[in-house]
Amino acid sequence: AINEGKTGGNWVILQNCHLAVSWMPVLEKLVEELDPEVVADTFRLWLSAMPSPHFPVSVLQNGMKMTVEPPKGLKSNLLRAYLSFEEEWFDSAGNTDASRRAFRKMLFGLCFFHALIQERCNYGPLGWNIPYQFSEPDRQIC
Image (cartoon, rainbow, N blue to C red):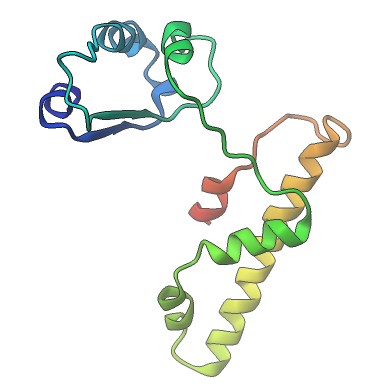
């Protein structure tokens, strides 16, 4: 995909790179071999990864980095959650008024729980036995 993107000027995204520890040296070599004189001007390589000691430092140093931080506060976290839902999906849930109300209550409970856990993580290890990063994909899976 990277070679096709280089020649065709496409955008390529490789997700969850931190999970492919054995492939990190190959990725590092591929990135080092990217020559601006040869690569198409419109080519972009996007990599997503969690912090990892195995991720090549040279790739981090030579690239632009973006981070996504969870919003601060319950209200902003709930707002972000509700804005991430497609309106059509939200409106189509349930066949009857009663089932729609039940769905919306459960959805609010899930979003509120997610926001509460996100806020609770700000207090560090107080009250937690095992640190766990409860993130946006965790809410989406539910």
